[in-house]
Length: 412
Image 1: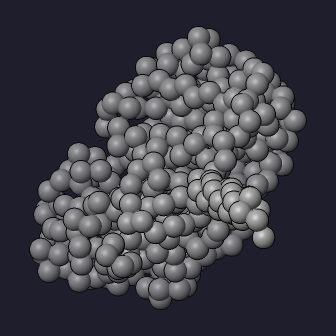
Image 2: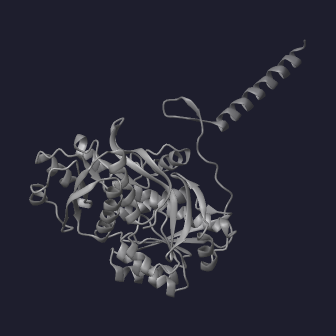
Image 3: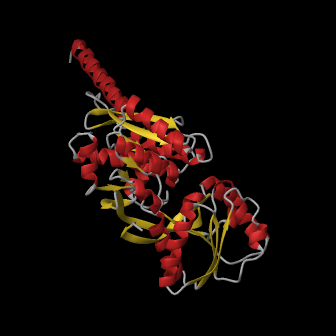
């Protein structure tokens, strides 16, 4: 073999080695520790073109519901990030306005979103009186559909106008299934009830009493306390002996209620008809005091479905160390309702087209199958509804699903 041939063979071998190294670098990412792993980042979608789809959120970013609204927006932004801000090859734009959880301001902000920002679909407001006022305005402003973030009171059916989409149902039905579970599955026969004075509280309570009575249970005493109460001592000291204590307290009063309940040596198990009133940071603050508390809701981060795992992963990618609560899921779900409606209309974003498909809209999401149906001027769901229990999950204290009412209609 001549030197010339040897040099040629060496040169070809070097070219092959360089090419192989380049291909390996393109197909793998290296972490800070130097280990090679397959890249998990999604490939960028082709650039969206055409007129945008425009999603709006009329939320109380300031005011007493600011925390709920902030969490809902995190869910909205997570869902938009998951679809890379485009749908059906067209861009998706997000517009928002702060209504301070004031019904009058909420209507003014709705007008801004519709007339100035050109939204085609609205999420919120979360505060139910604001939501009712906004739906009434939307009926006069072209009929843009409006989607709830959480459940709604039946009072809001009065202004639903065929536009109100309530994918998490009405409070009365949520309370009803919680009452059935308390009597039939937990086996409790008597409960005392303490609620903040609020429309949602009364409808949850009424639903609970109905379901509990049908299951052989009896409510011994019901108290309604001012909504800004944080000292519950005068109410706790007068509780009758019962199998459990039902309570609906939220915000700054939620954790103090549980702590004071334990300080007074009360031992009847605590049950609450809206698990979302206790965020994971609040549960972490309570520690073992919150463990074994029972609640219900339409979502929990611990739901074991592939779609939910994908949502949780995407949420934590944007907000490291945080698990999505019901408010965040509700925000993401509102975006999903808009996207699924657009898919059903083949991209027709006119109010008439969107509201028409709401009557039979069905999709699979993190919580499983959801189907909408008309109900007294609104659209309510047939969906799974979850009974939850606070448990230790690794180094977290979290709401964990323990029982499911499968594909139930969440009307009154």
